[in-house]
Every structure is written in C-alpha cells, then in structure tokens.
Length: 63
Picture 1 (cartoon, rainbow, N blue to C red):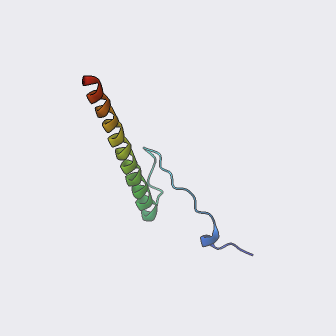
Picture 2: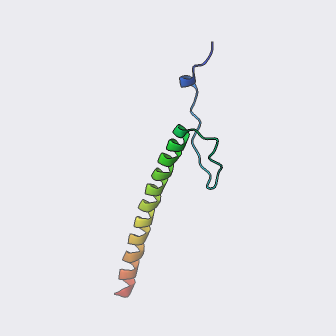
Picture 3: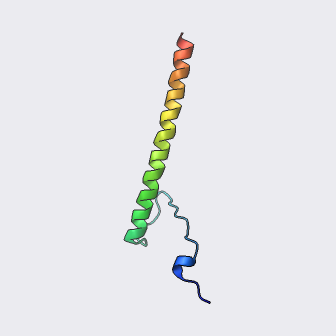
C-alpha cells in the first residue's frame, strides 16, 4: 500500500540566516516569510515584557 503525499508527516520548516534561497520554490519562500513574521512577533512580545519588567524595577528602586 503506497502512502499518499498528504499522509506523510510534513517536514518542519526551518530557516537559517544567510541560507542560499535559489533552490526554494515560491511556496517555500512564502512559508519561510510567514515563519519569520511569527518569530518576529514572538520576539517583540518577549521584548515588551522584559522592558515592562525593567521599567517596574527601575521605578521601584528610584522610590
């Protein structure tokens, strides 16, 4: 019994900064852009939390 392409586990998308992009399809490039946008949003959320924590500590120790 042959496996359909839909039945196979999907390969997890990963991206390496500076990687050669010439062998990627348009769909693969779009997938990587989406992946990187999600990662940027995650980083911005973490940054906001760290800044808020630092600002709260600064306010506490200024008092």
